[in-house]
Length: 272
Image (cartoon, rainbow, N blue to C red; front, side):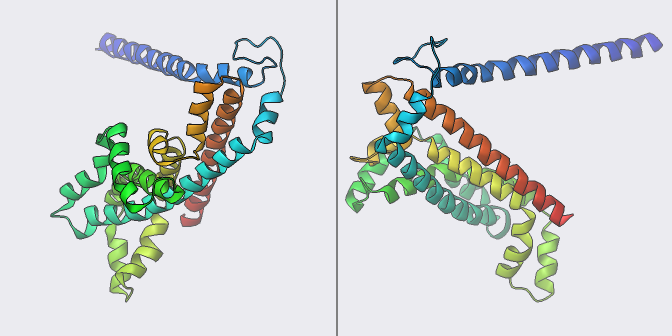
């Protein structure tokens, strides 16, 4: 009996060690491209090369000195924010309908919300181009934001639906029993409780929109978002500016994640 227990403990230790080794190897494998692109972004040469022969900040200066890069970045931020607001608002209503009001039609409603995740990007982009060309939204930044919002919707619905299913609805019912309307109960009770999930959904939506290329290629017209500008730069003129932009995108994602984590901690501390 003792030998069997000791053997089980030994096998568990081996399994834990193997799990940690595999996790670290996977993490380093995913981190390797970042370790390469950062030195390239500080290259002093005129071409992409690793390791760089010299180091300089000239490509960061090139990015900030060219209006085309700045305009593309501002446009991507503008489109990302609007797409995030629309997708989170609509996704929250979808999640409420799936988990609260339309239980009979919940599965069908959930499939409708997740449909943009299944459709290939090129098929979706062609469809949006055909529709938006009739509505006069091709070449309009708001048209890109609407198309991105639909792409972001599945991620928002998945996160918020899972959060609302775990949320104790009795708190909402108690507020309504004390005289609050359903809208007030949702605004004052439900939303503060699921705020971390709302922030996570907003983060996923913003990153999805900010990084989307195919839709922008069909709908942007003469101007372009940052991913389209990066694609054109790779196709027409390859230089380390693309690496500098990539590093700044990585830093932006890290900064947004840090802000969201801080907001989540503050929200947890306030609720506790």
